[in-house]
Length: 288
Image (tube, rainbow, N blue to C red; front, side, top):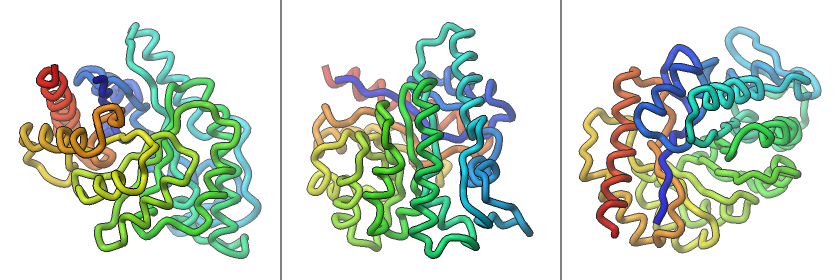
């Protein structure tokens, strides 16, 4: 059994190098650039052509376009160069905010509907993914707005989004226990992604929905809640073992915190990563 440790994306470090160093120091197997240049909306909405910032709110003002220099491509090259400089064997994960989440975060003053705006964003982000795949080892699409319900047009949106992308794709979403989880997971299972990532430490019911409705994809398991300060190792170990028992050891590809770490202090963020690694190591050492 092989389970890799990773993070969702962000880290509260002041620089890309500090974020990578913090992940390597805690033994994270699949690191990110830490998303230190802004929050998940700002990083993308701030660079996509056609999106303007007015009175603290992003708005789609004209036809969307991908910037020739990319959005996060430069940061990923810097992260890769830094890993090579340190002679690290860690893998690199590129994290992209999804088109549905961006569409909901931006006022739409140009396209005829939210669906039309989301599909346009998917086409723009496809250019970013195609460039990123030459730099990173694995890609992650963040769609926390799926918490409000997976849109009916998710399948064509993701088909446009990942067209021509050959790297493994993780979809990270937030589960809503007040929704029909089986119905929501069933929609997500139809998308062209290889790994599903949910905040399953916060909403453990989603694992049963995955067992029933998403039998094909691998799992990136959110096993540490980031909204609480007490992190007992035995609780994290129990969550990992429950997922293995429910879904099978071959399906658990990654273990991560539930969410990004941007709003944590560096010390707390590092403690969360340490707990993920310690719990994974304990599970593996006791599975032989």
